[in-house]
Image: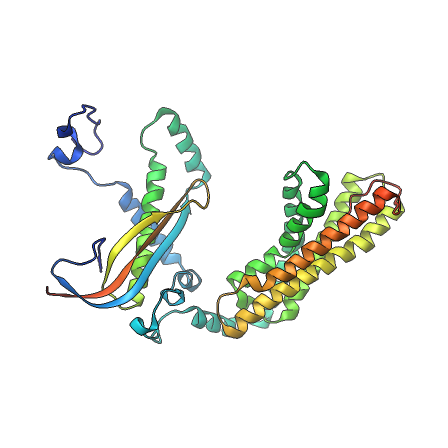
Length: 266
Length: 107
């Protein structure tokens, strides 16, 4: 019985494939897979290869294998080589692209979080701040995690974070004043363009300090970025944002803050 | 390079152990193949798109493991094992690992 022929459903053990004693055809997908992988391999860069280099494995024993020879690709050598190759001009172009991506990406994150809970209070105080603070700095974080050498100074990272917060706040304000609340009061507009903008820029800046710590540690020691170094700062940004939303919600409910209309905070 | 799932290689002597080597991958097919596989699922038979996916993943994980062995100067990987994980739906996730060794002919 050939591999592709109709199987024999007779229950006898003599009908098992390995007892049939006839030829079998190979897996036709093997050749196709080999071609596809060869094509991918030919397009792979050092950035792809360094992801799988054995010299970054924690289980590697120097007692057994010694040190990598000069021609071996290690994460440290890849990083050092790319730091040398990255010019200030290229770095500033990347910074600009990250700034431009941060606002829209943050808005997408905010939209995605809308349907995650039917509890409005939970959405406003927990889910919204957590999602927004992550997505506002997500583009910069991706660069730091995958290509840390593209940034050349801490200032660029802080600028990305703060401008990302500013862009997010601006887009959010335009959405609120033009779509959610087209019949708004001047107090509402003033509040959104001062307090809310300040909140987003400040929180993003705080999260940016965390990103700067991750980047600085990776560049100084030329090892893979350790994201845990930035988590405390990201949490501070999230908690600060959440507390702000909570306080504004309470102030509006109690009548201490009156903008002439129902105003979702943050 | 010799790659085997046995601890020893018949006719060879393990001269040197280099250490653990591993390769992993998470691959997916494009949405069109997913849709076609969904349609094929209605009538039964081999979901060739997913067979390809698994073949590609197995080969890539194996190649990455062998690449690590090469980097260590090994000429064989023994005690090779394959395992899978479940990170995301619709993807084939393969992890291959073994022990890189330098093997020389002779018992």
